[in-house]
Amino acid sequence: MFEQIKHNMETIEGIESYPVTALLIFFLFFVGLAFWVFSYKKDKIEEMSQIPLKD
Image (cartoon, rainbow, N blue to C red):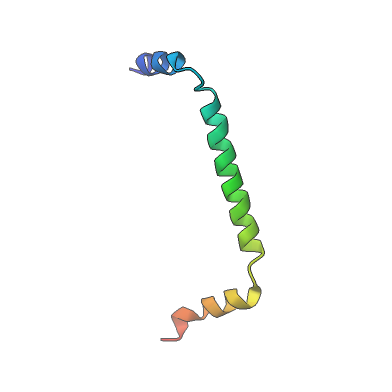
């Protein structure tokens, strides 16, 4: 079964760019997420951490 999938993947033109594109999208997403997390205001994080305890 793997040989059939491999053969189909080899016959699609331009498929070699898909893994690079997917890696780039995921890398940019996680870099953006890390930037957002580390730039978040500490007082807002403290306020949100107290929400479950207010009840």
